[in-house]
Image (tube, rainbow, N blue to C red):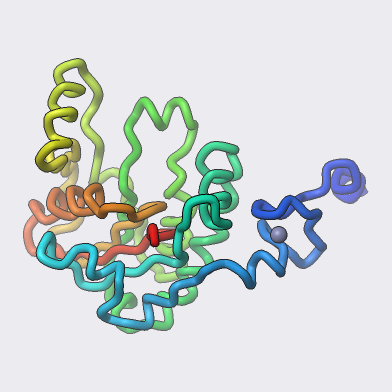
Length: 226
Ligand SMILES: [Zn+2]
């Protein structure tokens, strides 16, 4: 009763078009859902996301659920997640992609899911890592652990700021730390993030994880810039 009254006064709306959601709709309305630019890249061993890493770092399998365009529906969705506190968007996308990956033998051999870490200060101001819900759902579907204490971001100091600024001209590898190498040694891990643009962050993360020895890397993100 209370729930229905609450919904009457504060109805849930589509995170893309703001229309009121129907009872059977979740996060986005059916119309927006069908119009989302889904890639289906996971169906292809060689695809544009995997190509991003050619000649940079060895990647087993790579995919993104959707194509991100400036001012497009995917940008709206990720903005709602990151800056408007709409945390349930992460698990929604994770459930979706997880169900797709589960059907693919190449993704079923993965041992653990590792999120791209958020800087401590950002974590404090935002209150959550936007990749967490997404990654946890994928891990749950594939029945593998979600490890968020293996790859960490270096803490912020003045000298670190200068180092990071300098690093931007070359590589940003040194901004990540491998905290528990024994947890991923000789394992195949799935790195997850929200958006791939240049791929530099994921490349740096992959190189850090490889320090554990015998590590295979696959990549899955909510979206890829296109
Ligand atoms: Zn809509």
